[in-house]
Amino acid sequence: MGTIVYYTTGLLVLSVFIFIWLERKYPYTKGMPVFRDGFWVDLIWYTFIQSYFLKIFIFDYLIEPMRRSWHLESMHWLDHWPVALQVLLFLVIHDFYIYWFHRAQHHSKLLWRTHEAHHSNKEVDWLAGARSHIVEIIVNQTIEFAPIVLLLGPNSPVVAIKALIDAVWGMYIHSNIDVRSGKLQYVINGPEMHQWHHADDKSVFYSNYSTKFAVWDWLFGTAYLPGRKKPRVFGLPYAYPRDYFGQHWFSVKRFDEEELVAKYPLFRTYHLSRLRLAKWIFGGIGWARKLGLAGSPGDKPANGGRMGQRVVESVAEGTESAI
Ligand SMILES: [Zn+2]
Ligand SMILES: [Zn+2]
Image (tube, rainbow, N blue to C red; front, side, top):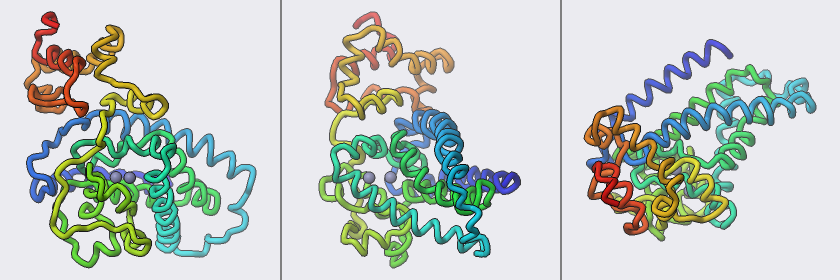
């Protein structure tokens, strides 16, 4: 599998640049910056750090022990199939599974705790889909890759090809691109329906669960596509932590991040460390703002403005002593 990973990684990086370029050229929501709010949390924490450790955990500590004890590879059930057909088989089966699991996450209060992180971005672009709770990734990726590794072996090219398709299709459905795919939207899922899935709008909370094939939504009566109308607001209807660890702790215990910032000096120091680091590196708040590392003075927190946000703004403006 060694060489194929170079190709799939190259294609992945190339796709990122293509998506960013298309988002600039044909934006779904106009005026969204490349470094939108939450960009760095999604890139550094979810895309690089979380993915790196979860890949090791899922493949080496969950799937590998199953492979060693069950020996399903020796049955050679799919070995004679062409790789393209093997990929298609696992693509369709997993996509069908994920439709129902995703639907359950929106209907169960407990499962929603593992999915709300994915809906928390207020601006949805090619990277927004990377934001997924640890439990959600462990469950979905184990169910996705265990059958492939167990039946075809860990070195099958299907693993790398499937991972690339997941990543590119994931970027596509979340991308801020004004795609008009016409009748193809009945089969291939894209931003037209998935941007709506991320809307803060009651009429779509129980709709558009499909990931790759939109056909599941049309078949099972959950499709929502109101012509050319676009959502006005995205994200969650309640205040949600901006910090990676806060986002995971919030799924276990509800708390108000802004109040913690205002109340506890230790938490405030931790919470503001990135902002202070950005100010220090860029020698001021201007560049930190351009890169999405600090909010703008006009930004209001999702909960309507509390003491904590005033503290954050004061650090950004360099008037912390006034608080
Ligand atoms: Zn969802
Ligand atoms: Zn999504």
